[in-house]
Image (tube, rainbow, N blue to C red; front, top):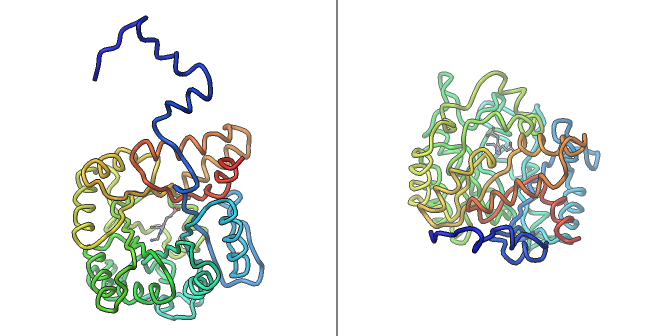
Length: 330
Ligand code: PBG
């Protein structure tokens, strides 16, 4: 880097006016960068607020369509769907995941008919459907990798047939991207995108999400540390990502976001492929609650998202997408 000396260089010069700061800004955030995660449930009420996630709701199908319309009007063009499944429908192997009348399949079909241009992202993982809350098949109290893969490929096919544009394997089983890519190719779904949660850490920041989808009660004190990554590791994230790309991932994702931006940066520099960040439920709730209490200025949300871009993220899944879009448009 060139050597700059004072007073020939006064770095404050380009900070003196807002429009000048905008001209020299190195990174930008726009609605093109934002993906809205949406919780859905089979419920009669249109929408129910989620206690652990201020200003975020669980929607029924009618309300999902209304919400999507609102998002489109604000310039958001991608949604990620997450279901809260009735406890009575959960079982050991998550069999409701393979029912083409489940709420996710219905939502994908309904969205595909009404909003063909909207990018519909669906998680490939069993945890919303299992009565133990884990992402895979339990054998002797261990999540069995290879038996889980058998189920994941079927779930992936069903989601693609229901209208998902993007499949997002989120369970961190080894080899899942390959089996999903193979089944898509052999069934003619050659354009279905795989967004792999390549570096997903075993994180306590997922707490509010698990409460929202009802998996925390099932999971109890059990952890996901035998499949999600140890938050002490960075090299391992690069290995995970390299393998997912080799297995057929089009886009890779790091999760959580804010505390893991070194991982985003390392992945983007190493692989130069589309790299997304998931600003997860706990991160959102910490910031949003503080904003609503008046403890933090509302600009903190935009700051946290722009910092994801600076780290190298191409797009961000964030519960604040709709609200930030309103700010960006105003
Ligand atoms: C499920 C899944 C989780 C999240 C997204 N998909 C939770 C988990 O792994 O336990 C977390 C998202 C969030 O916290 O916002 N496999």
